[in-house]
Length: 363
Image 1 (tube, rainbow, N blue to C red):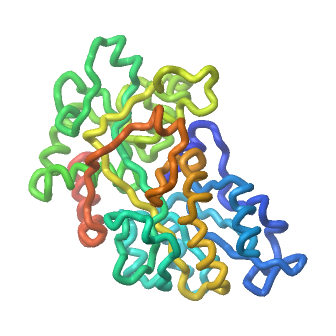
Image 2: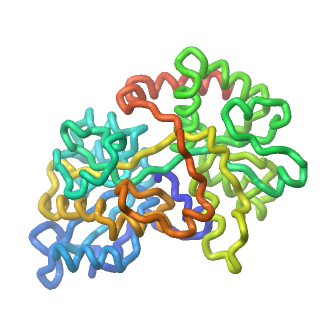
């Protein structure tokens, strides 16, 4: 998603990469071909994009196109850069615009319509642009409060489950969240409270949350890896906050690579505090390699790629037939009723909501 969860739990990510399926990063790599006469399709994305080399090699085998990946910071930064460079796009496909930023990208005319193969296997409620097919839903993820199991067991305290719980006295000074003006998870958490309490109630909720000692930091990595007591990074930094705004997929990330596998993850998820993000891909208007771009979007919805995503980007497939890995089914939280808001409503109100939040919480 918009923040590289896996990077913060120990996997390094560069700001611009060429995956092993591409022979060289330099040179002219448009649809006319690259070294050796092979064709290249360029994917522009955020820093969190990751795929197994063998999976993208399968795309090359099927289509004849090699994949070049350009990473451009977090989702907001990458989307803004794509908008600024839309007259001379950096690539052919953009992946990583989510429902909190979607209307901005669509209003700026960033994408060329394309109805992807396999879209009939994606639930209708994920298809935010079904009428025009300017973007294709690729994955979903839930932003939720995570909790440190050991802390709550040691203090004989039941972990919170809902937004209402977070303002109770027993959870005073326990929560750290991210600033919605500077963080995608922070914005998603704010949007979750707006969806829950409505235009007339969300500010009153945040007043109570502030009175209950919520701590605000700029970004997810600081919140999760430094301030949260339940993460591997948090333990090293002696974080003292047992509640943090993160992802429903954070528990599987904490367990990944641990031997022997524990009975449960060291962190849990308050499933009544979740807001659903949906990530999309689109064919960039003015792309040099439109045929390759269409083939790549089709592949992003293919089960081969969809089943690779969970343990690479810690998101869930949009394709309803794609199977989740055991790590997700065993340790991941099941979120049945996440909060949602229409992208149009987010686009219309996002800036004023963030401004009101800043005035209320940071003053």
